[in-house]
Image (cartoon, rainbow, N blue to C red; front, top):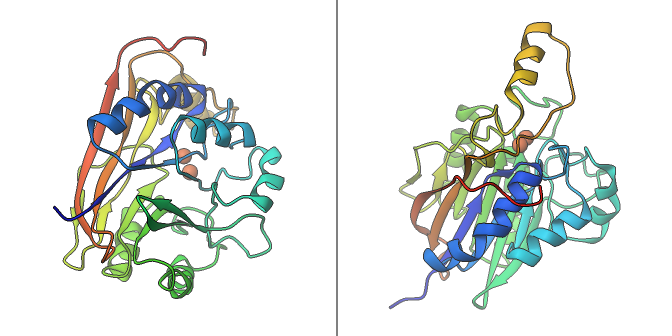
Length: 272
Ligand SMILES: [Fe+2]
Ligand SMILES: [Fe+2]
């Protein structure tokens, strides 16, 4: 049988809850679904639920992540800034100004093949002053195509239309475009005719009874009073851990299959 790569891409991991779920389940999920590599979005993985630290990147890697992606919360814990300057296993959206620390594209080896991972951020209902994600993707692909035909894009964006727009723009040029940021797994995974896999959002790892992983009453108060408050990560069960598994032809970089992964867990997490 022709060799394939199977990559699990997980949505935003929320605080201690998301980290503990990753540690508890990732090895058994890899075995159960014959997963060769894992990419997880870590922008919400700090204790506060916004930002990430060098220790948390090490934690994800120790438990089985190959690459950690991020999004608008990448700068929220400033201890990550020097790490971004020196490392490429955590990436930030490529269309932030070039003066920002870190890179938006990286590569790792899986079963002897180079796999590219790109992080981009949307501008619709987000930060409109970012560089154009379409043009930035095009610019980076000119470099990556010299290295590998396999490219997995985490498009951290709010609007479904922008996510689909970028995907059709990149159809046939990248292996997959997966959305993150809304923390809700969507039921629209597909493979475009050009061989690019797509899902609007990977969802999250966190507590189910929450507003995108955070305390609902606080969120409700925020909407009613129009005053912000510190987010509070929910740690109580039941939990949900979601993403997609993509099967890739490593010689062509085309996606062969994409399937949603939903892991439910009702057992309280220890020590969080
Ligand atoms: Fe997020
Ligand atoms: Fe986000």
